[in-house]
Each structure stands twice: as structure tokens, then as C-alpha cells.
Length: 293
Image (cartoon, rainbow, N blue to C red; front, side, top):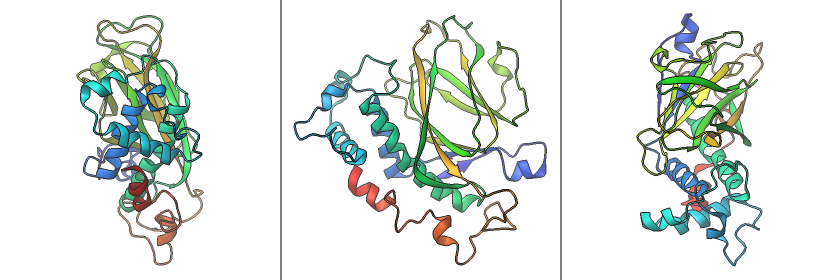
């Protein structure tokens, strides 16, 4: 994994400790497998996986996910396409809720990586995930213009990833301070945006599968904008995101790696907590590989 960030901000602290980071996990095979299979499974009809041995009755979502992932991993593209669920408006079904749950594994690994990049990113203790669904507007957006479709603000640091982005969709997340009212106009040219968080499925054929998770600092005002595209649908789901919630220390407490909070080292005796109790937590990498891949 590696993190991508822009050294920007109004203060020195914001430049060194930015309000959001983008993490590319393309070189992590285990994480890549989970996200790819989860996006493929989200698009499938539930009845396609109605195994006689009670896959969905198993209380462990990881085991059910592993069985389904192994079932589809060797399917030819045309057979996988034949499993497509035409229902792209239902956010919560047993199958899709299982997919969201599996993203705890992704956030677990990303959190471990981020703890080595910056000690102020928070501690992820799974399961701790929420779902954010973005709908098309009921009135069309002019092509090339963007309109705000959602807002989000969390009192804890979050890691967010895309589970589903409909073909032809272009979404941008703007991250600002709680009291910052950026881009108050409801319609404006998309060229006005700076380098914030972009989810672009306008040139994607098949399943959206970009290898990024985005970490966003707590108490930031997150505004989501949808860009108008030719023949864009009216109503229905445009995208579904899942985000993991990170615990953080109170502001008046020293961080484990103080005084440095950018690439700092964990002090002796704090390593177990900073690495999220790897030896005891069910989400560690070795266990994940054995149950999923």
C-alpha cells in the first residue's frame, strides 16, 4: 500500500497532517481480492448462491463470503454477467449486508498501514462500519455541471471505499472544516473543483473496481457532488459507499508517538495497541487469507 496526498492547507499542520489521505492498495493481493469479489457479489442475484448446505444461514458472514467468492472467481465473464441482479435500487439485502460487513477486513488492513504513516489516524476496532447510499436526483443535471446530492459529517475519523458506482457516474467528495460552506451554489462547472476525492465510472465497462480507500479526519464537513452525464437516469442508486469508523484519543491526551505525528514511531510498550491487537483480533491478515481466498 501507499498513501497519496497533496501538501495543501491554510496552516503548516494541515500540510503535514492533512484532513484526508488516499490509500492505494493495488499491490496488496489480499485486500484487492476482498474488494474485487465484494463488488462483484454486490451485483449478483442472491438466488444464484442459494447453496443446499445453508451458506446464508451461517452466522459468520466471512465464511459465507468465502464460499461465494470461491464460487465466482473462476467463472468466465459471460457466466458472471448472467448472474447480474437487475435490482440496483435496494441498498440492504442479506447478500449486500454481508458485502458491507466484509469491508471491515479492508479497513483493518488500511488502518494498520496508516498507523505506520501517521499516529493520529485513529484506531479501528471492527466491526465498525456504516453505509452511505447516493441516489440520482429526480430532476436532470445539466451535462458538465455538478450538483450536491449528500452531506456527511462524522465525530470520528473514517475510512471510506466504493462498493458500487453505477456506469457513467462521476462523483466528487469535498472535505472541509465543519463551518466551511464551500460551493454553496447548487449548480456550477465541474472544472471549478480542486484535487479532492473523485469516483469516476464514466469510462468503466463492467464493475467499478478502483483500488482506493480514503481516510478523512473527524469533524470535517463532507459534501458529495454528482456530475451531470448524457442519458443519466432519474432516481435510483448512483453509488453505494461503506465507511469504517476509527476511535481517537481526546485532544488533551498525548498521542503514543508524540511529539512527531507524521511518520512517527510507536513508543516501546504501545506497539500492541497501535497495531490494533493483531495477535488477538479475528481480522488479522493470516486469518483473513485462510477464510476468504
